[in-house]
Length: 189
Image 1 (cartoon, one colour):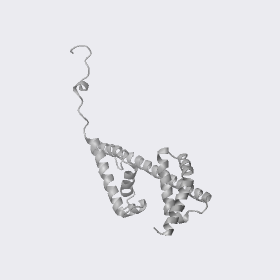
Image 2 (cartoon, helix red, strand yellow; image 1 turned 30 degrees about the horizontal axis):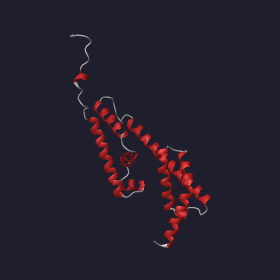
Image 3 (cartoon, helix red, strand yellow; image 1 turned 90 degrees about the vertical axis):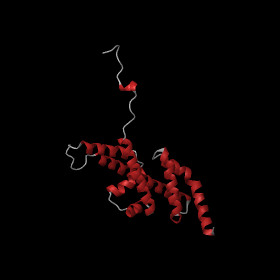
Image 4 (cartoon, helix red, strand yellow; image 1 turned 60 degrees about the vertical axis):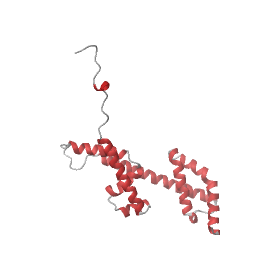
């Protein structure tokens, strides 16, 4: 480990210890408690990657961290809004639907239900390629990941979507004899 790396680590550690609690409270007031830790972790990851951009004084550095956290929260909010718009778009009737094809309607409903069971990451991977019409390399660039990582993410998202669709198409368990027949009301009919 060279001297510059040791100095950077010491400066980052000092910043982390001085600002973590305040930053966590800042984020918790603006989002769910479950997401707050993730946002704070992302904020400090940005700070580590851009350590040269972090102001030298502690007060200015705290303000810089709060700005990064605020921007991350806004990005998450925009992502959630895009996801909701996509769900609404999927739920709308397909273009050219005339009302005569019950199988198409059922397939559309099945797709909408399966979509809701996917994680946001799976939805995003599928959206970028199927809705936004980006190539794999373009989608990988948008997400800031490698082409290979995106290919794997897309493969897994497609696999999970197919799995959810199959689960919806499988018939449920057969009703037991006690629930299959209505209870008699006092004698033979």
